[in-house]
Amino acid sequence: MHTGEQYHKFMLASERDHAVRDQFQKMALDLLAKGADILDFGAGTGIDAKAYSTHGHQTFVYEPSEAMRAYLGHHCRDEIVRKTVVAIDSPDDCKVQAVTANFAVLNHIENHAPLFEALYRVVDPGGFVLASMLNPYYLGDARYRWWRHNLLTLMRTGRYAIESESRIHRFAPRVVARAAAPYFKLERITPRGLGLATHLYMFLLFRRT
Image 1 (tube, rainbow, N blue to C red):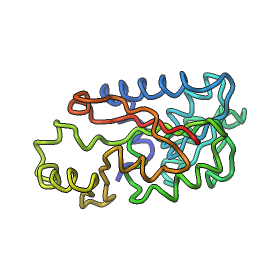
Image 2: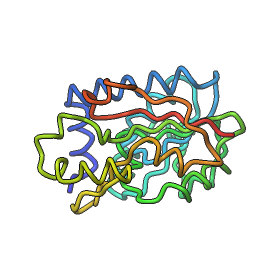
Image 3: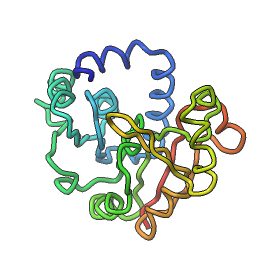
């Protein structure tokens, strides 16, 4: 189990994760209207929140892990004082144009339908949810027995779970899209087609209906 500080330092030191984060942040910022508020759902240690705040977006942060929240308070202390980063106890405590969930936050949730129903109350009409999720089709995972063991289940049902401490779930985009309806519509998947075979993460963009 990582402490908040250990997780923070690991994420900043990983070149691959840094590249994924840069791509995700750019996509989110390009979609946001100038000065629009945003909810960072599963904000971790506040790396994304700090970036959104720097670009002029008041950022609400929801993070259930006490260790992560503690380090977020350290990393974003200046932004918290200025109230450009605001910690909340529940997503219902804010109203925003967009919600972001980076680095597999939604892979820890077995059933997304109640979450999207809740986020419908949080996101303004025409707003969006952008999620970075583990890609179940990533061929780099084919070297692992658990991936090969679950391949038929993935093809048949579009989902499977890995037995572990956190019980990480893998989802095909269509499964998440079905859970999001009728509140959100899947608008974009990045990457698409054969690109899914070579990327550990996929970005799913949902538009509020």
